[in-house]
Image (cartoon, rainbow, N blue to C red; front, side, top):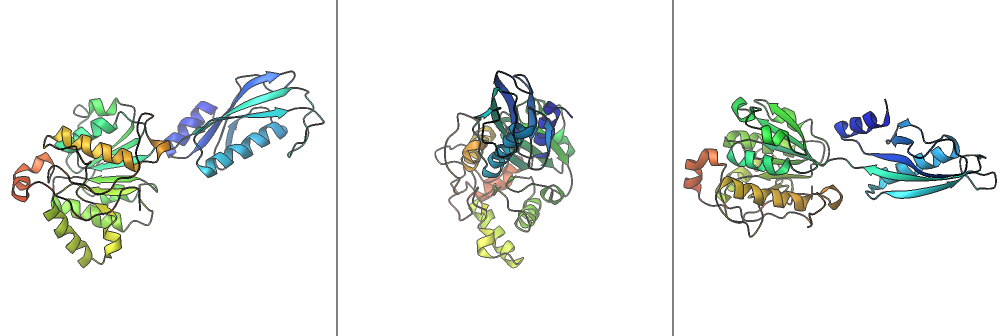
Length: 311
């Protein structure tokens, strides 16, 4: 596997890595400028010259992976018998400068429910460097013609038609962000219950709904054996303060803004800023697909819940 395929494989697998490039060569060296290798936690692909030069690059790359460092850096190596090297001598006589570029893991966002709000949210998130998983029990909501502009975005998009969204939940990696906004309260509840039972910690769990819905869910979750601390991991209502309106696109903007605040700075798109998401007023109670029920329950007000990014 060449370095480009290796980098793509790490991205597909959600694993971090570092791309090492010979940026400059002065004098004699084992590889010319432009030679590349990819380093993961436990493997390497390609070569930048072997010996102490490569061993030092691999060691530093794995330090960057371990620390979560996201900034590229230069590493210079003297290839002469007088240089103090940790991994043996190289007597080529030249000087090599290596560029180490971390290959960040794309944050995972799983949307359960692709109705009016879910679709608008998917459109926004698809323009960001994320892994976007779209899950719905209704096949028509996941039609590829309907989702064409979502699939064509920057995000890596996965589409899952399943009657049991819990099966997708179980496959999520650590730190994934979950947004629950299906057309069915029973489905919403089942997903909330399953999310709280996952062995791997999530980056956050958001539930669309009114304060009345959330009050009922809290009682049901408590009756199912979840502690108050566990239930507080769910944020409901969801959204961003100051963004109001009942149009699905407006709601989607509010939820997307809150999600961006929840992502670590190293995983956001370059122009975003902010810290973490706290539970805020959400401008409506349900996905547009259940507007009649939404009218009965009314506009969501502030309600207790967790904080996305603090699982």
